[in-house]
Image (cartoon, rainbow, N blue to C red; front, side, top):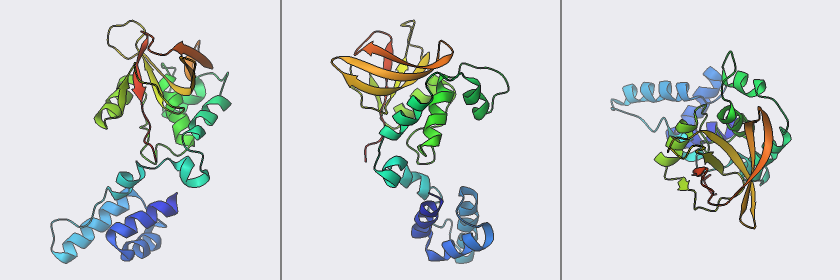
Length: 211
């Protein structure tokens, strides 16, 4: 993935960026892309040079599991299932919290990170369910409870029916009018659950970008 990022930014900036980034930093980073852009803009007398956000702009349309293995969103489901029965400390500490928090979103984020989906821009890193909802809504990828999701999509819940998002999980599968999920912080464990499609407790779905 690091080589892919380097190549993508080099496509946007030109091959000189690749040589420069490897020599000075060993590869691509967003900060050195900003530095190179500023340097070249000054040399050229331009107000800007290239697109410093080119890599995240491109990678959000790709699921890393598909790039590497053809596994698609199934990679997220597989990682989530491998965590079944785990407690929450692994996830909230990975996120950066020093003490326990409601960790369902931390669980989703860590699974996504392990698949490369955060780096690819397919799923945001988030610890608040509302932040996840806002991200998918901003990209036009938030669907309401009437939607039929696919494996790997995120499922958001509103337990009280008050319009507030309380919980998030990962869709494992859908069959015979039932959506099967993998969720962190369900009884303080990672557990598999199931719900009737269109259930009143389902707030909606964050739909992963198709490739």
